Length: 301
Image 1: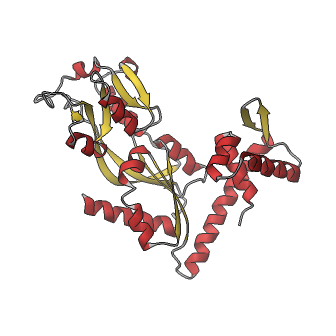
Image 2: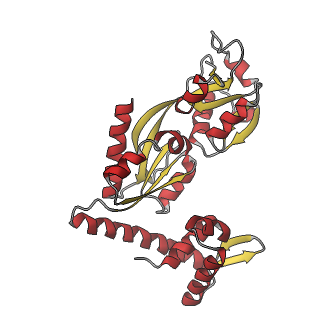
Image 3: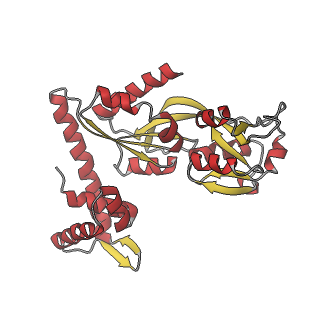
């Protein structure tokens, strides 16, 4: 098993924060400091520069991070192969998913998978599509699920599920419009959108570019980093429009809190992809999860 101090080092290097590393690993900040100092004494090198509240990697720290990530990948591959010798469905499976998937698509699948494979230790990282891609490339995840248009040549993508974005607003006494709203009218309204790096925002910006509309010309009231925050904002603001996955709207629309607004000539289809590092085979646990997820989603559709 790799030295736990390396896990501590990787966490601090990833967050550039001793506090966040302590929260991620569920240990105290003094314990984090102790492990890092032990590593620095062991290698005779400073691994981090500390300037006030800012933390950065030294050249030695960057070199150690590169090899620590490789050690983690090799250890996981060894673990998978050892379990495979006895056909054991055990080990660790680190999943990562962009926000819509992590909040609305994957949670109903996880209990069934855990019931079928109780020895697999599951974890799920929630981030935007850009963050999930980065975590995969750094070896911090085994399998990712993302949305959006932008793809990395270093990652392999496979279709998981189709989706659609919808324009939505606080429910009005008259109900949803019977005729589509002109696109020009929508663009005059203040908008509540997902943050940069999110697949949701990418889909909207790609669609607008097809109409020669620059994203910089939008009247953005707020960028928010998750869909729940957007829905709550819209429920409190009668003047704003938001763009949200249809999979995230069922409860609010049924309860009469939000209403979908069709927009003329604005079509926002998208798909969710399973993603992993190009040229790197999926672990047995990741293959099982992907197969299980596909079957569950086909049944639900």
